[in-house]
Image 1 (cartoon, rainbow, N blue to C red):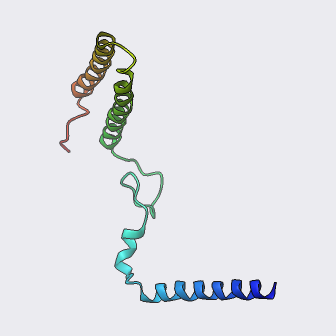
Image 2 (image 1 turned 45 degrees about the horizontal axis):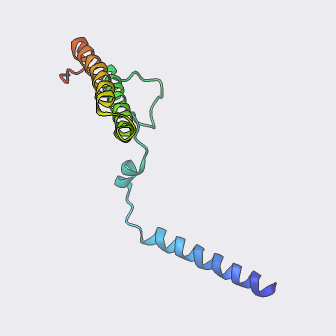
Image 3 (image 1 turned 30 degrees about the vertical axis):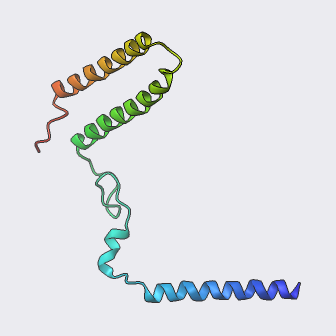
Length: 117
């Protein structure tokens, strides 16, 4: 039991020494503080959380999510080709793509894809 306690204490001391050594030798400077801070949705985390954000950013994020979900739905359809015939598979795929293209056309028509500031 004493040997186990001694080994545990030695391991903890080695760990503390390694952590201290890493902190001393690390090349962190005050300028690197910004790189280490979290960055989300274009907000500075050290300011007021109730500031309005760009609606264009929100629309681009929604369009990205739509097309991301499209990919996650199209990929399993490839596996469904093994169990269905080519006519059924192509009809489902065409209907799916038509719905997505209509959504893209609607977004384009509404001006959500304008990148001008």
